[in-house]
Length: 288
Length: 196
Image 1 (cartoon, rainbow over the protein chains, first blue to last red):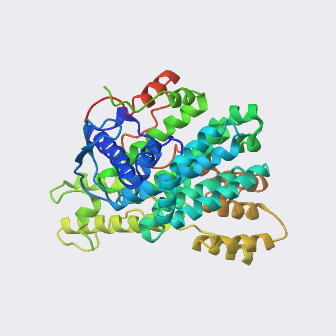
Image 2: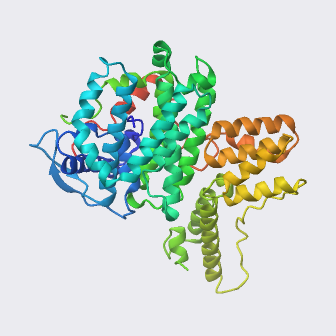
Image 3: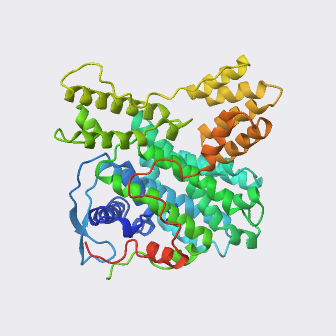
């Protein structure tokens, strides 16, 4: 997960913005309570979306106040703990840890030092989370192994490589019942979309480093933004179709904003190269 | 049955026009065209049935209990298909039932690859979410049999990307006009500022 899934603020209503912020802060607090001081460092927009998505549908939400992790002198509105928030927190830790392990494997001994240090710090939290969600941890492990085999083979199929990450994210929601089916389909295509966006984002870098990149393996070293954009849009259309079939209560406007406005804008930024700038700058500001 | 007004999301006192408008919006949302070959198509169909029944119930009620005032709303999506090859017909049934593994196995058993073969292969890929492969197979099917309407429709549904499907009001595709700097500005001020 890489922070691609974010709302488009100018079109958010104030109450939806408050809800988003409260969920973000609530997830941060939940990570701190369950996993100590290190885990909140790995909080990001994607995990917030996951928490919003997994939440049982409610007609309205009432935030409580809690202390900010970054600045304990401030008290902020936060959403209350719930099973969905706990699930999102556990899964965040597992995903963050595996992503760090992945960077350690990819980088050399020296350049991988940072990631290795961080994954060492996150280790105890990860082991706790893996005990709580053994099934999810198992799926993530299997999918990432499959992915690394495909990468070594220089797999030319875009769908096959994206499928591994899509299935990984799909397993973040319990798949039973009507709601489970809707969430599964939504998360599958979200995973596919994220994987493709990330592959496009890494295109230049991978070319210079001589690494495998699914987009260049499929479309050639220059990529093909038109074809890639279309297949990403098709996934987006399926995300939207699934979203319309689920019950999300008061969180629906926020989820719709992210799906119909946030994701297309991020895609645009990734394609025209401005995404690198956006990533470099600190987006979450607490001081104003 | 749920209260028909609840289903359509309008109050009991809503005017006939408001009821009609709400019905039309929901029918547009759950229209079978938006869920063709979608693994969730059955859920959309159920919703469609529910809102059709609700609309019928309200119109009947308002017409003073007069029976037979059917709305003639959107009905289920039926695709006429006359199978020439029994294996292909069987594969179609398996795809519709969601048994993709079995369908694929049968398909690989077919020796000759014609337009129908590529179309079905594309349908299986689409159901799985392998959209790039689905596009390639549909294109090949259209190439082989350019006059087949079904193949062409499947391909053109994919070519429209996000432009065709349902979007709630207020989420039109208005982002294309934005230049690079505005994009950055908008994404950057997502969550900054504004104490809650």
